[in-house]
Image 1 (cartoon, rainbow, N blue to C red):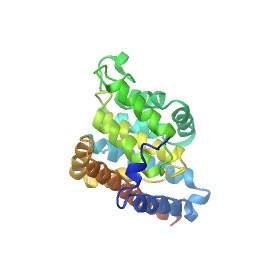
Image 2 (spheres, rainbow, N blue to C red):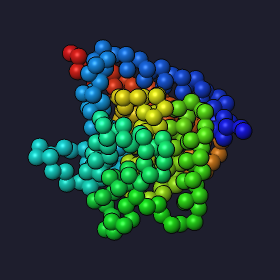
Image 3 (spheres, helix red, strand yellow):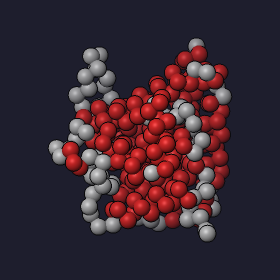
Image 4 (cartoon, rainbow, N blue to C red):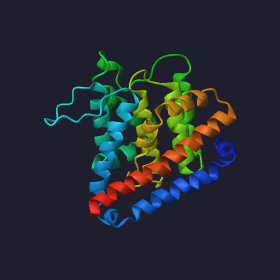
Length: 248
């Protein structure tokens, strides 16, 4: 069967961008601070990612000294960050690999716990026509594609942002899901990269690109994939700065 993502891989510049992202993340995993000390740098990456992801959606980045986070967007993003670190990450990756929809439901439960009044809505996609079908198609694509991992991560990220399947905290969930793809595929096995910083610095371009991605036009989808590959490459540079600080 033809891989549904192969046309994306064949677009100008996509394979080269995916290779650059992969090489950059592989290099940071070889950093001397990450050979044995990666749990420390991964924990810092998770916090930076959570704060940046919250800020993209209009949340605070302030971490109170008493640990009591008042902003619900940041609180949810930090909970997601904890689920993307350490033993919790291994458990979540296992769920993602065998039942992606369950992993997405778990991410939404964590991200939106302080944002919805009805707890029954947590982890449950909207009942709007077509949402369930598009999620099922996304899962089939993720499980069946042999495209480079950066391309799959970009498609998962873009589709979840464009579809907004839960109606709350969809941005935090989408960015976390792209991290899950990166970890589970071996692209970023220790979750050291912080592409969220890149997206936050280019927030409007990021939002415009995902709106265009939602149109389904080939050039817009290709531009989105290239943007996500650039974010992964930049996220490796952020990871290098964390590792440099840890080893300094």
